[in-house]
Length: 322
Length: 133
Image 1 (cartoon, chains in turn yellow, purple):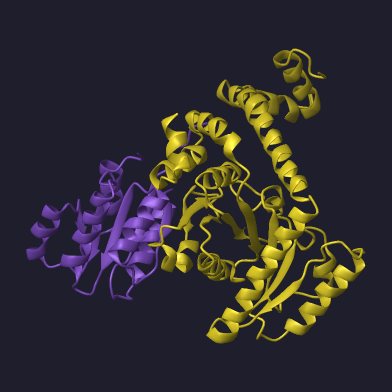
Image 2: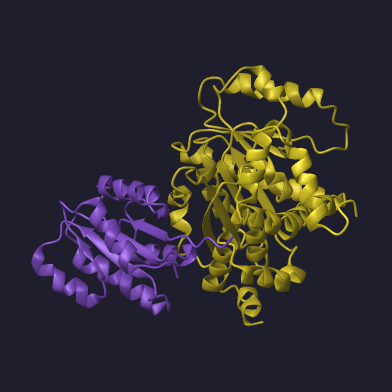
């Protein structure tokens, strides 16, 4: 297939168009993914997540620079939210990365969430495959500005970086479930600000409670101070890059990378099954108005959502329990 | 279900930090349901063209209020052409004197919007002339 060849040669126009077709749900894009799938699995996938304004894009800009110094090629996917009202989006993360635009070793693509709730867009998983097959050594994925629950990045990244800033809440925030559990590396950004010491202690305490044994990877906590002091900032970014590499080496040495890859595959299977089985049925129910009629019957208490679902399953699936 | 969205880039080439207009337009495009990539100020034509290609946009809107539009705008069109991406529509706006219009149109700019243009008329133009590719 011509497209596969072009993607493997790193052709930007083909790659970005395939990503767009994935976003727009053009069936042909799935065919392309089927064909490139055998070539996936070479890039180190790094996820960067954290609250809006924490400094994710700016950190990514510096991380890209440090990989480029080592001669590694980088692909970047930046996710920003879609308006729930108009379906439009402003994709503004790219602003921070513009100095890399003319570097042919860096490919940056922005994606809108299109209603996905986990902090990413549905197309991200496959877009990572595309960048991987383009031959990028490293693929960096920036999530939307996250709250507590947007943890889908763990289904896609080998190394997850959680970027925090001081002054966002008390110590209970640090022991809550969700985003604080998914970090392989913590970064306290803007660490020249008040509250850094306390945030550091809170994360430390949370990690102490997690009961890591001696040989486990205990997520390091790195402090990155103001970007306006270039000397120290550059030094800290170097530390960040080294830590990311150390985590990747750890995964490789321990044979743990396979677990992460398997997690992504299971997630993809889940999504594909949903798209293949559930969505066509749902689309049909919506198109012929049956979904609304079922809702009417439920509202009149003639039936209930579970019974409706069982009726549909009995009709549409040969053997619902199979 | 297939959902083709219009992707638009709003960009400010050259040494011009007056981006209120560009931001208002970005917001207007967002509200029209487009996916808008904003590059920020002080971009070179090369950066804009390369970004437009990487982002697979259908339309680039250039804004310049500094007076350097006669070089900067055509240059973006030219680079897109060099890179085989002349299927991307380029329009522009800013402080542009009437006598410069012909030169810009000849260079391949598809529309020019000057101060006082309503947001609706820009949206109308886009909806009529640009289809998601």
